[in-house]
Image 1: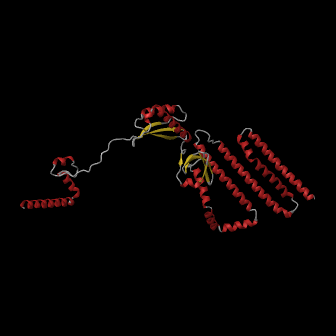
Image 2 (image 1 turned 90 degrees about the vertical axis):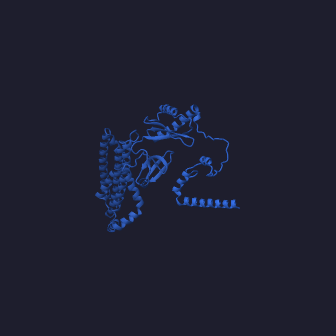
Length: 407
C-alpha cells in the first residue's frame, strides 16, 4: 500500500513540476505576445500539443521514479515512449504550420502586384505539406522501432534494400512521379497559386497545389483536378506568368459601306466611359475585305483576364448599339446580281482561208502562223506529225479533184 502511495505522491510531484514549468513558459509567451504578433500566433498553434507533451512527460517521470510493479514497467515505459513520440511529432507539425503561416501572412496575394507573393505562397504550401509528411513518417518509424520484432524486421529489410527499393519504386512510380512533379512546379516557378491558366480547354485560376494534384477553380465555379504530371508533360497557357495585363480582340464582319474612321472615333468615346480599360492600347483595323464583307478588328487592353473579358463584352455591345443607330447601312448584307442569261456558244475553229475570222479568235497557240509555230516549241514531234498528215490529206484531196476534172 505504501508503494502505491509513494507512486501517487511522486507522480503528483512530477506532474506538478511539469505544469509549473509549462505555466512559466506560457506566461513568458503571453508577455512576449503583447509586443510581438508572432508570439501570439505561436501560442495559438502550439498550445494543445505543448500541454499534451508536458503532461505526458510529467506522468512518465513519476512512473519511472517509483512504479511499484516491475513486471508492468516495460510495457508502460514503451507506451509512454510512443505517447511522447506522438506528442513530439504533433508539436513539430504545429511549429511547421506556425512558421509557414507567418511566411504566408508576410506575402499576401490580395494586392495588385502579387507575382512574387504568389510564387512564395506556392512554394511555402508545398514545403509545409512535405515537412508534415516527413514528420509523420519519421514518427511512425520511431514508434515501430520501439518493438523488438520490428527492429529485427528492419535489419532484414536493410539487408535486402536493393530488392525492396526496386519493388517499392515500381509500386509507387505514379505517386513518386506526381510528388516530384509538384515540387518541380513550384520551385521552378512554372505554376503558382492564383495563376490564371487554360488547361484541357478550360479557363480558371489555380486554387491549390499539392504534392500529387493541382486544383483549378474554373470561371463557372466548377473545380478541375489535374495530376501534377499533367503540367510537366502537357502544354498549357499561363496568363499571369510574368504579369496579369492582357490584350484582347473584338471582331465584326460588316458591309463595305462601313466607315472605319467613324468607328475608330466612337471606340475612343466608348473606352473613355469605362474603368475596365487600363489605357495601354486601343486599336481599330480592317484586317479582311473579301467575300463581300469587311472585317474590323478592335484591340483593347485590361489589367487582368476577368477584366479583359468584361471589357470585350462591353465594347462589343456598345459598338453594336452604335452601328444600329448611327450606321445601319454597315450591317452585313448579301447581294445577288439578277440579269438575263444567254446560253454559252461553242467556239468554232476558223478556216485558214478566212483571215478576218482568224484574227477575231486568234489565241496564244492557235489561229495564226506565229501561234502554231509557238505551239511547236511545246509539242515538238507531235505537231510535225499533224502537219504531215494534213499535207497528205490536202494532196489526196487535190488528186481527187484533178481526176474529177479529167472525167
